[in-house]
Image (tube, rainbow, N blue to C red):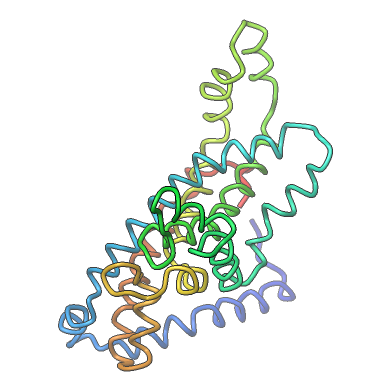
Length: 262
């Protein structure tokens, strides 16, 4: 490929510089010598454990529920599909803290569903680790749905039709033909979903609170440390940065095909 024209190259360089400046500031302010002590004192390991566990569970739930919904939005034809798609993607543009407040009114002890969960089954979600999973699933699942739906729309129907011609049942066709076809996009959507859940803040603190060892994720730990000790906040941010970069490194080009939609 040739050189990029300067009307494109100059803004691209400015964009890279703008995106890298916060990262540079974080690295320059990092307390490298005191890093181990700060991580131990700030209970970073507990927060990291909660973050990794809840983000992984939220991703599994998103896969179980989101992939079928993506298929319905991409392949099924029914009245109100456009409205359903708009409602499903609302969390993409809705401020996360609003989502957390909405969860409280729906699943809190006095919520229109939560009150019955508490009375009939003794299940209380707010300010619990399960509540963290619910909040993260709410904000992260749409990323998976949008990615998988785009892949299903762009995937060729030829192989699926051929499988149906040979007598394959619909679910068997989906499992053995459709899923391998959208595999790269499914993987990309899962990683994006997991990364979004890992960095979730607003909905989590509104619905699950910030209880160390119970609901305090890495994002909440950074926020709390920033109020008291900026060095500890930087140390925690570095840990989250390393984990995030490691996850994004999984999105290598060889796993994605041109039809993958991010």
